[in-house]
Amino acid sequence: MTDRLDNLGIFLLAVASAFVTANAYYIHPIIGRVAESFEVSKGLVGVVPALNQFALALGVLLLLPLGDRMSNRRLVAVCLSAQTLALLCMAVVETFSVFVVASTVLGFFTITPYLLPAYASKRVEPANLGFVTAVLTAGVIAGVQLSRLGSGVIAEYLGWRVVYFVATALMTCSAVALPLLMKGEGPRDNQETLPSYGALLRSLARLSSKYRSVVISGVIQGLNFGIFIATWMGIGLHLTSERMNLGTDIVGYLAAFSGIAILFTPFAGRYADRLGPEKARVFAAWGQLLGISTFMLAGSTWWYLLLPIWLIALVSPVIDISGRIIGLRQPAEVRTRMMSLYITLMFVGGSIGSWSGTLAYDSAGWSGTVILICCMSAVVCLLSVQQYQSITSRMSH
Image 1 (tube, rainbow, N blue to C red):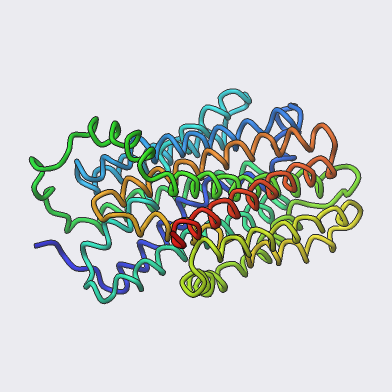
Image 2 (cartoon, rainbow, N blue to C red):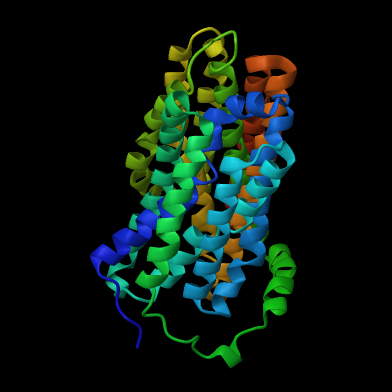
């Protein structure tokens, strides 16, 4: 019999999720400072978040299935230890190529936030599962938002390397505390009846062909997440450029402002439930395109960023939650693998957005960033409409 998690244990899992999630987003406000420090172009520095996100996608695809084959506690301990070493390396290295490698290793082992919900679900009463899922999701969102605020402010007054020293300290605490919190985990049940690791991976190709709606949803969310990453890459480079001459702390404050997404995420879920995920996503996609189109006004003053950031923070979670609902309404025996595929596609999109965003800014400045994310948003709209029309056509027949 496994130990039950109380509210304090659930809260600590959420805090750990926030710390781990944050590692991928410290770079957003400070990317211009990192480029200056290593004396690389704004286009080349985009390889750091791009490879981090791509490695994260690979980690979800290759490491997450191990959660069904081995002790979650042991897997988490290994991943957190590797991340701690990678962060320390990022804080001290003087060579850009080594910094890139460390960031890529950091991304590959960032699977803990996606492993903990399954771990926690086995240790709470079924009636509390929704509450637990919401708390852990809030931890992930808090990690995304607060990391950029802290990174921007710390880098402005203490230098960007201090950001990664602080991150190393937080991960050291997590690497010690989280395995202790998970000490009640028992052995894997029915290990002999589970598919082999290789069989689980091979089945993804077959399932992706059978459940195309989940794959399309993953592509849509990949573009949606790519827009998010490219937007903040552009904001970080634009505001700290010679033209704007603002500090990284302003980027952090804007990131904190976008944290209103935390408050509206539960409403996004209810909105998708009421309209249906496909229809809700169509409205959200068009709303996002409207918001993105107003970014062009922010070429000369950062105050004009507030409106589009607010609009995107409202509608972007609807796109993600709608895609997750589509994945979770598939047969129970394939849901975990479908969600692994969905998350993998999401981070592949984030990788593309990271590098294309910095390349667009390097080539055409803020206008290049806005044109890129407008095009990506338009594709999100087209795919969302196409999938909604497809399902309504099937229902009418």
